Image (cartoon, rainbow, N blue to C red):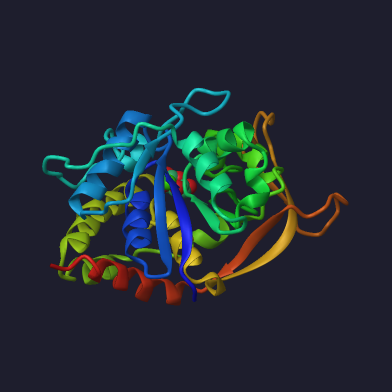
Length: 311
Ligand code: BDR
Ligand code: CA
C-alpha cells in the first residue's frame, strides 16, 4: 500500500476522535490537515475536542475550523450519544494546540488546487458542509481530488430517523452537492460501518494496551459504549474509524457503482440516501457504495495505531 495524502473532515465526537488517532498514526496516510465542522456538537465544541485530542497525543497536523452550521438548516447536535461537550468522558489537561486562522473550506480549495491532480483524498466523517462549501467555492476540486470517502447514509435503515443516518440528515443539501459534484465519491453507510462493533471484550482488551492513545480511547469509548447501550440498546459501531481503515487499505471494502440521490424534501425521509441498487431509475451511477466490510481486518489496524503512541 502506498502512502497518500488525506484531509480528514471531522465533527469530533467519540468515533471521530478514534478516526483522528488512526489517521495520524498510519504509515499509509500522510495526514495533510484536519478540517472541522459543526455536527455532533456546535463548532466551538467540535473544534475544542479536535484540538484537545491532537494536543493530548502530540499530533502536529494543522487543524482548520470550518462551517458553524449546515448550509441551509439549523444544527441539531447529538448530545445523547456524544454528551454536552461532544466528547464527554476523557478529561484533558491544558490544550497546547491552536487552530489555524484560515477557514476549512478555503484551505481545502487551496490545498487541492495547488497539489498535482489526483493526489489528495478527503475522508469526511461528519456532515458534508465543509466539503460542499469547498466545492461551491471552486467546483474544479471535484475532479482534482483522488476520492471523497464519506461516512454517511445507508442503503436501508437509518440511525437518527428510520430513514436517515446522522451525518446526511444533519445537512442533506451539502450531501446532495457532494454526491452530484462529479468527484469520485465512496459512501460507507451504516450498512457497512455497523459491522465494526466494539464489544465489551474488545474495549477491555484495547484499554489494556500501553500508551496515551489507548488511555484516551478507553476513556472516550467507555462513555460512547454506555450511551449507545442506553439509547440504542447495542454495542457501539466505530463508524468514523472504519472509513480511515478503508483509506489505509481499500481492499477492506467491497463496493458497487450505483446511482445515489439524497432526499432533501421528504417529510418522513429527510436525509435518506436513495440508492438505486437495481438500476430502476435509469440514472447514471455517481457513487461507489460500500456493500460489505471485512471487519476482522479492522481490529489489527486499530491496535497498531494505538500502539504508535507509546512512550
Ligand atoms: C455518524 O454520526 C456521528 O454521530 C458519528 O460521529 C458518525 O460520524 C454515525 O451516524
Ligand atoms: Ca463523526
